[in-house]
Image 1 (cartoon, protein in one colour):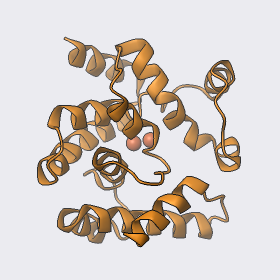
Image 2 (cartoon, protein in one colour):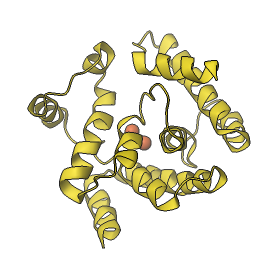
Image 3 (cartoon, rainbow, N blue to C red):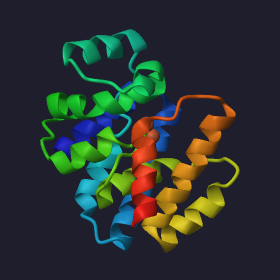
Image 4 (cartoon, rainbow, N blue to C red):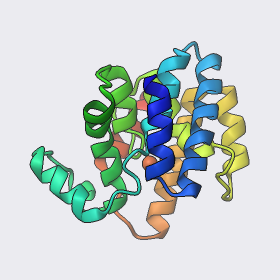
Length: 186
Ligand SMILES: [Fe+2]
Ligand SMILES: [Fe+2]
């Protein structure tokens, strides 16, 4: 079964901590899917695969980005931490034959978010930030907000991330700004 193959692959290719994080994203995403009328199977699949490339080495990632001629934003070019999200849909397609664009989009945008996110995009984005093994100042407040209202939770999560990036004096990806503006407009 495809899902078992994916679990085995992740167990082999992710560091232990990352594998545990992935299982946490799966359980959180399924819970949020239930609360928000989203398809549970799609939520599980997207959660499972969102960090599939997280422990790939940087040189291999760079090669794949060049091979597939992927256009990057300035911040994506300069932020290695974002590359695994860009490549995850390619690996999901090639290795596991996942062709559902709805799932692939949630995987692609889990790091930065984007303008006009689908329910599944939002679920994976925020499940990644609040799954049980995450531990940082403000995570409890964020968990509560997400359970109350998905959009408000995602907005709070983006605010948190942008504040963190400002303090680090790091680049803020333009897609995060667009995603946040879109949520504020609604
Ligand atoms: Fe990630
Ligand atoms: Fe993650």
